[in-house]
Length: 224
Image (cartoon, helix red, strand yellow):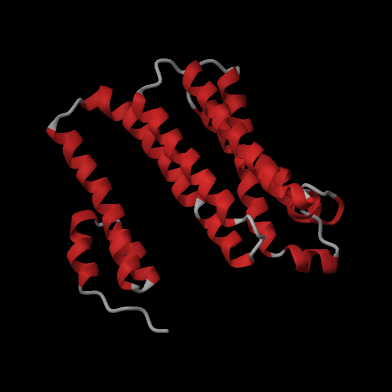
């Protein structure tokens, strides 16, 4: 229902980004319900739901800033228009609320370990970088800020991953191999960016891990 409703909300709601976030965030209660056990959703599920809604509102507002002038001309509504000149302050508040909600999640799912909070710390730095990018509403930089949320999400994901990996595997050979594989994906990605390799190619190759690195080193730059 929310997915179908979202495209129409741009016509009559000033915050369609919130509806988009509500649709995306449905993955949270769906995941909890899919796990056998208590049919009642725990409080942490709704806090996670709220975090996703706030995060989606934040990054989709950055995306909406790219089209802000066009949207104003055609009469499409968005938070990028609603926030006006306070958009940087409100985006900063949204980021703070997302990270605060995730801190609460870590507290409820005790014991949250150092990797989890390290991931949130990296995400906080990236949030500051995004706010720097959008400070003058330049469409190109706003789109960069929107895309930077890939790294923002990756930092949180890796924090969660290592929160579970370290207690489960310790610092065993398996742990080292997994870490090398993850590190090689990021290294392959950075090499591809430096060499301006063909985008679909390096996206596919980067997940090969260490094998991708020599392949990308010899990859041809993408055509202009």
